[in-house]
Image 1 (cartoon, rainbow, N blue to C red):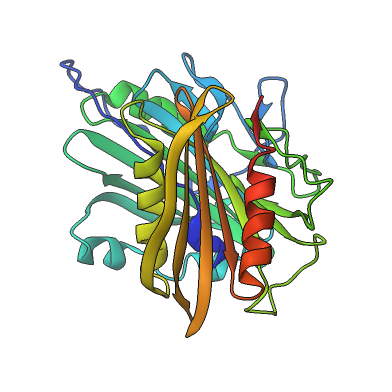
Image 2 (cartoon, helix red, strand yellow):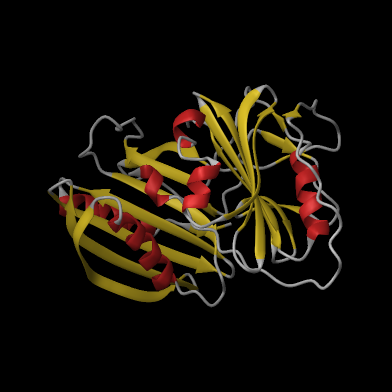
Length: 317
């Protein structure tokens, strides 16, 4: 259930009327030593040389150029490259009607990798690069305006500079746009992956207990015209595709908290045949949004109150 709460990236595209240069090529064996030009992307073990005009971003983690070009990075340090990319192949993309320009199996720092160049929509093109092993899975997604091949070439050139340090210890809150005080809560920080922060009772691993309550906090970029209620609705729609049934939204409120737009709701329904409550709390500051989803199948009212209390400790940095 943790994985279905990963955030959505809202990508905008713009047109550019210049004649596109020849496309840059991805290396079949990306192998680099770290140099003084490399920067570490906060919250990851990945180093990359930023292209001219790109700056480091934290929400989402990666590099950004203006509003329409970016390289987002999801470093799943407890993931599995082989299971995560089981359906990542050319045939699978084409069956979904996606236009593929290039697909290759390559290497990144000695790790197996998959690379694809594709048309995201009429206005945007994308590069996806995924690499890892049985203990981690790292994905880079480059997006740029379809007519701006110069920026596309910059992105590919940057991908060719990747250096990955599997031994690096990551500070999970280095790239966090928020703080959360769990000192007085029974729910404690357990795990961080990409932009997803998981809280469990006493911070213990409960993955083998399907009925254990948990909280997932995510941070993501938000279009300024998208409301906190709409963000909550998108996440709920996703959850309904992964086993949540008979969902009924109750006690929904929209208000200002510390001057920021916030939305709160209880979603009553069933998960795996058991009565469940999902507590949704979404708060926004400018183009950033923090989302909390608390899921419980036991001690419903007690855990619901614990979710609500913890949500009130969220602060933007």
